[in-house]
Amino acid sequence: AEKKDNYIWALEQFSNIFNHHHPQVLVMDKEQALINAIDHVFPNSHHILCRWHIFKNIQLHCRKNFKSEEDWAEFRSLWNYLVASKSETQYEENFNKIYIKVNANTSHYLITNWLPLKYKFVSFWTDQFPHFNNCNTSRIEGLHSYIKRFITSSVGSFGAVVRQINDAITIQIKEQNTEAFSLETKILKGLPHSINNLSGKITQFAIRTCHSLHLSKEKSTECFNCSFRKYMGIPCVHKIKEYELKGKQFEVEDFHDQWHFKKKFSKFFHLMIFLFFIFN
Image 1: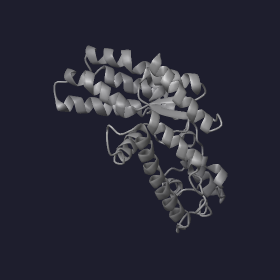
Image 2: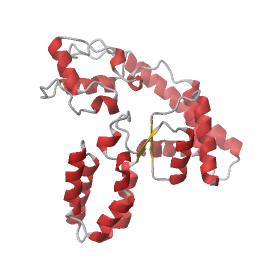
Image 3: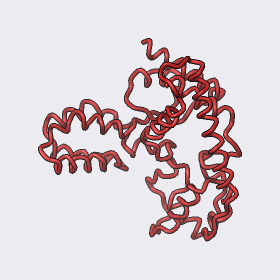
Image 4: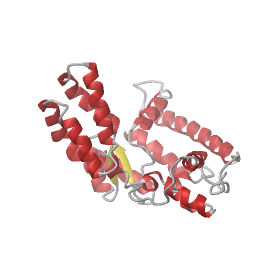
């Protein structure tokens, strides 16, 4: 209960910083105290469980049940297909392929611990919300490593640690602003008509993603069950093919705010990252 209360307090500070605008999606490992705190502070936010942490747990509990590296590699491949399932039917088919391959101990572990949570890590369900392909917490692990380089002692005062974290974040934000300005002023050439008006308005990643979809061999202009727009915030290949066919152009508003150029990182972003490292 004490740990949950600590998480609630920290999350409430995030909420206050952003004027109580709640995040749409949160990626985390399976820590029940944090999940309970998020349900309390951000009841309308969606959880995604880190796929990397899930498989590390499966490896810890189930690797011993496989007789050879080949069998384990085959299971890992089948698991990846299961996680990437794009429909309920596909999920059931991929689950059956795993079920007939593994022994009773492994199937029991999966069915007991992870498959009831499929809504939080299988693509068909998670792709209904904008996660921008962030299905692991690896970026946070990288940020932890970066921050630790600035903390000079494990026994320093709280005030010293706060100043060191603040210095690290200030440097990183300046670097991000410089990089963003450089990319914003760089005009990409050779773009198709549907997106050649967007250089300097949305990020190069979003433009390059659209360009690669434009070059795909897909011919259909019907989305059917396509969820790419929902989870990436970028027009899907079918919409791109439709605009190409009609000679239309996309506008900035066709892309999620995630891909809009920000003139600079705000003080609110600075505070958010600062609080994250203080209380994580």
